[in-house]
Amino acid sequence: MNIGYARGNKLNQQFDVLESYELDEIFSDDNHSYDVFQDPDSDYQRLLDYTEPGDCLVIAFLEVISRDYQQLLVFFNELEDLELDLIVLTSPELTLNDWREVLSWVSRNDQLLHPRLIKLNLKPGKKQTKETYSVFTRNAEAKRLYRDVMWQLVGKNKLRTIAKQKGVPVETVYRIQQEFKRVKLAVILAMCFFLTIATIKITENFSDNILIQIVVCVVSTVVILYNTLSDSEQQ
Image (cartoon, rainbow, N blue to C red; front, top):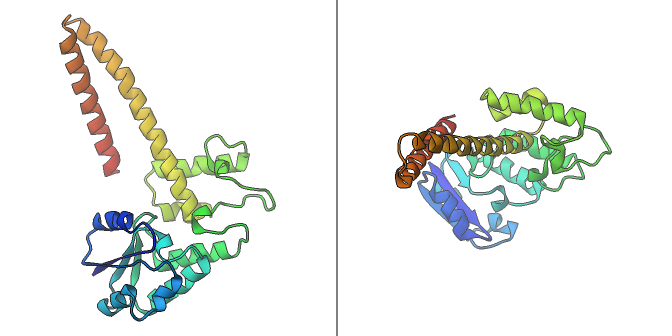
């Protein structure tokens, strides 16, 4: 069974995310303290009583459990002891072992305070920022890494496979993937713009009616966008 769980702030937002996933039951606690997981009267304890080995705990964000990676490691160990799986809907699909590897890596790097801030330390002692791993980076090694990951994404390789091959955290590959999607969408919109102009010019040769030109232009643009975005979703 897939069991949803929400806790702390933004419960409504968490419910919206959870309800988009196929769940058998949802539990929630409005207690912000991590101690709620040890409270025998909490909904989380009722959730554990409801689950069986092999079930899956589904949460909207990793922060639902904790922002402290040491507490997260303890929590993952407890889930493993109970033979439960974990799905974080707003993060890459990782197993408990994958999450443990990511968080263990974080725990060995004092400059990182949260799993979402993971970056590859290409040169020890040099401050790395979000811009380090982008198409506009000035770091030659980071630029090569970014380009290699981008080509791997074009080849439709899995995030974990790319991360393992390149020796980078999955979070870094995931962020590059999101940037790639934004660039791809920008290219699609630019193509639609030029195709729209071309459609207007072609339509002018067949009709002087401005209304017909607008209708043809809109229909052509919608068809192009629909087919392109449909292909992107299938990928």
